[in-house]
Length: 299
Length: 305
Image (cartoon, rainbow over all chains, first blue to last red; front, side, top):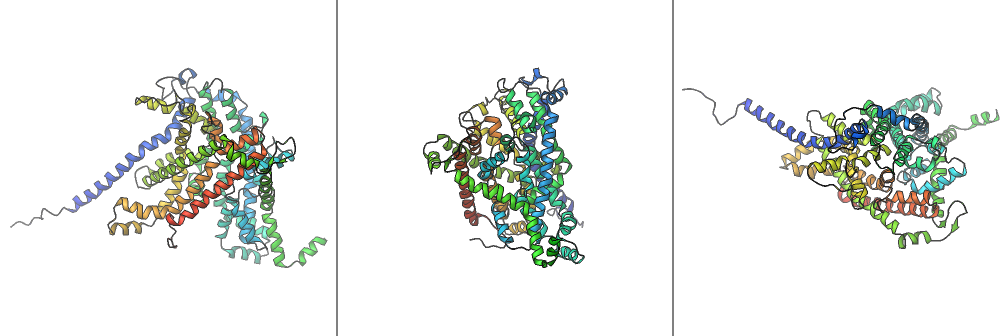
């Protein structure tokens, strides 16, 4: 008599294969669902790059050329020399850097004060701070404009920079305070025993320990200021004080009457203005994602 | 010297309090000078007529009465902003959740896919507005070229009063990557035991989604919903650069209308009244969402009402 395995029971190999096949089928379906969306999301970027490299005569072609032929790198030179772009870039960098320094410095001192020091009225003041997180800036916009106008600051960079030196945005203060609260208070007390002042504690202990939070905050402060158009358009008038955003808008206005002429120039200029944001994203991707998750801010 | 000796005489608690006020001083100045003060001022300005060149003239409730009785542009601004909020916010949220669920699976190249979906959220400002003006071009824009390829004659988009607002809503879906990342983090925070327990109880994928994923993710969705509505009332750059509120007033967003009143027509009093009405609308909408939250937001450790 021959011993055979009963046919009804599948072998271990068949089972493994079935499991593998099921997971393979599942992953394939998911990938098939992901790809079309990814193409839709990347297409505008490709379209932009493609247009920016086209010969002006070939921009308005039906059906359009997807890969430009010939590739005109010269469009970028033309875009940069059309307006004094370097000058506007310097203006934007100056504003952004000053905002960053002020925001990080004053938001962190305020956060430290609220998190660690005891003084009368602290909790009440902190509730006030939290209640202004949701306050839309439009409510304070017009009197703020009148104050800055009274001080003679309209058409200078000050209205764009000074608010960042006055505690920044309440949300960042709140965030940093929460972050400081997770640092063991024993660190402060040990330093106090050694005779450290409150400023020493802030500067030598707290600041180094909240570096990850400060990094996340700086990414967003950079993006807000780099991309700001609303306040720039309100406060800046003279052409030599324009930021990159205002310059881009002016390029559009210049051609409004001859709508869509020189689209390749506009696209090249737009790519150059976007580039720093993309570079920051690709160099600090992990920090970036952590920052969004941590703060709930959507750039 | 005198200051130093009296400083030394202060006891520790008083010193700590003085240091405390010093540390939060930047915020106190900012709060008084840039928030509380201006808030009070704009409240009073909203009852005046003020064109900067002459002192403000008290007009009582006239600004508010005009807004609700004889200003068709105000009504359009409300209609445009709410329409955008009703379509762009919930659909954007659902799409970002769907994508987050797909990208939460272990498929090959998932980090590349995540980057591609997130990338558009990194860029903003006038450059993005420019890009989309070109994409929506009635003849040579990417969208109408694509539609033409499958035999559909696309509309004039930004040039057509009935298609300009839908165009801006479609454009908003391009930058749902931020919401996607937040949802992804939320999904990864859901303990797998919950799904296993649900499976043992015989729940299929669809039922697991409704009974585990949605309740566990509801605080995140709730936060994004509130922020989305507030953001809509602040919508400015795209409307300013791409359509200037037109054609007609079909994309006259609330914030753009406020800006025009204040800085184009110099109606500072009327613009202040607009700002206060905006504040109240946001407040009411946020309160409504908060009040409704016990019925659909699940917080661990709290019993649902």
